[in-house]
Length: 90
Image (cartoon, rainbow, N blue to C red; front, side, top):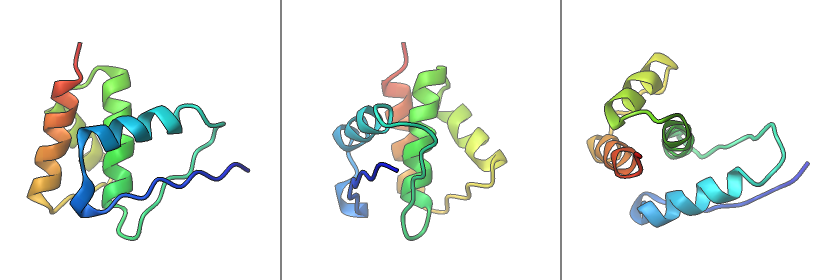
């Protein structure tokens, strides 16, 4: 098992932090276990990675996340996810 720590707080969400996560998580062996205390940050980071790799829009990402049971009740996080994903399209 390989261990990789990427600390993320609600105060340091940034496109650079997500890019760093995406680079690192895609270099390690699979399967990958990603977690945080509430599941919101880790869920958002995983969904943003999936969305960009699969070519989803920000809205599609939020819809698919909700269908998977990821309930985000933080408007700022939802907006960040949409903006990040839409900014990485194409």
